[in-house]
Image (cartoon, rainbow, N blue to C red):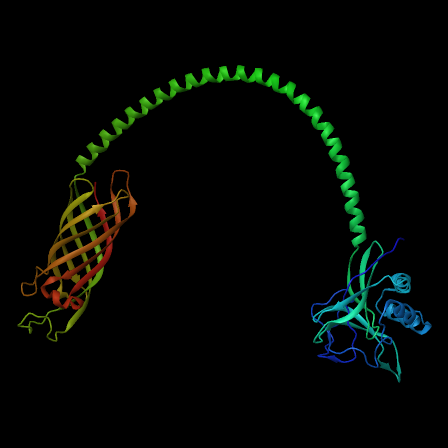
Length: 409
């Protein structure tokens, strides 16, 4: 297996760990640092300080350091690259770097006291939290399966794994192979393109001849289709003329149409006459009375969509029957194309009681619920009236209700 050694930066070595948290993180990655290192050196360091490459080679060549390095790699489950790691250090295949505050490492070696003696161990998930960068050596192991980036701080020799990722060297080789394949495919594609262009040129010549013949055929078809279209348009125009005549005739026949309506609602009125000045500022009791009513009338179509509709009706007071009211309305309505309408009007309320008879101002609308083919229509309607006798006390002199209105043929 070919091993590629490169150089890069990142590492820390620690003597004091502040904010220690055990997260149970795997060797390959961690979301948050489990250990934050704030100082370098100290009794738990892996080796004495190593200030240059020769010193690094000499220090890590010691038998005890070699054994402890093997133990660290075993703990980190990296025994499959033990030989490559040791060779990179022995050959001095490293580069000098500086480690910035906030740099994360997957794990770091150190030598804490265990059972009365210092033994090699690894801390997983370490972040350099010091106030400034520190110098270190970096080297990279690539076994064509994965790329491992290691750092060794100069102050303590605590070897650390900064990253573990898919093989960059294998990715480079794959890219080169892909580029070679692409070039060969491009050459073959070019040859095929030229052959295809020759074939297409011949096909184009034949197609041009066929297209000319097809164009002549389509031109003849287009002339025949245009003649048929003109004939169809003439037929439709005649049908439209006849339909419009029928519509106008129907409108003339429907210019006067009866209707009947039923309602449920209420009125609020002041019946007391103790307001001689007629200013509406005397204290007068107002009565809210539920009503059930009906009215009949005739719609007369004016020009356009305007309709005038005189009507007469009766509002039965279900609370005080002696306050029931006979009334008349003169409606002016605007009819929409979907037969809905909105309108206003004037009227007279309470014709059955001469002492309390009052003119009214009407506002109402209707929405079609059902439409018959012969223009019969059932509406949902809402009506509101202002009882103008005491218009100055409009909040106590009004009437409104809703119901159904049926328009006959």
